[in-house]
Image 1 (cartoon, one colour):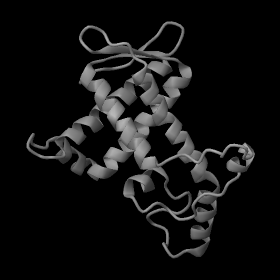
Image 2 (cartoon, rainbow, N blue to C red):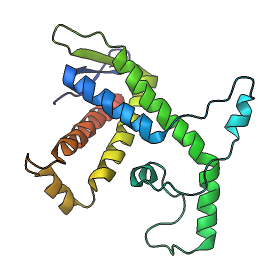
Image 3 (cartoon, rainbow, N blue to C red):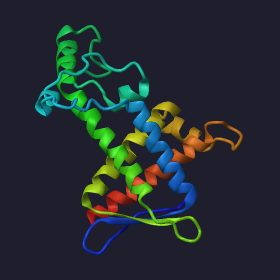
Length: 197
């Protein structure tokens, strides 16, 4: 997998993807959607503004990947985990922001699925994906969320451990996810570089 984004004349970015890459990206985006859970769309006749001001959860997610996607707003590893003021501030922040953040992450992943589904395959099964400005932003968000999720599942940490992960033997069951993690990072990096040109 050596795909990388290139700038399009007039803005946006393009990348050539083979059939396997398209399949992997779509599968990962669908898995991210499943992890994020269904959206809270307003019921027919319900005031859409009411959903905007609906309160979300006040406790952090128990799944480590979701906890990485929706981290605590206040406090850090060096702070007292029993500090009631920090806990209350984090709970309050989460209650009023997580629903919107979750919805935005869902929109990003869904945009990836839709753009991939809209590709017209070439004779070899691959295709060139062309993204406009809004789609580029959705893709950047989704690529970041996918890397955070996979990195959490792989327990990617400090540099020493990372270099060990990258040298896994082919027989290690984590190897495909490490390869996906590295590939998504390269895609994300080339998309950022393309947009900065």
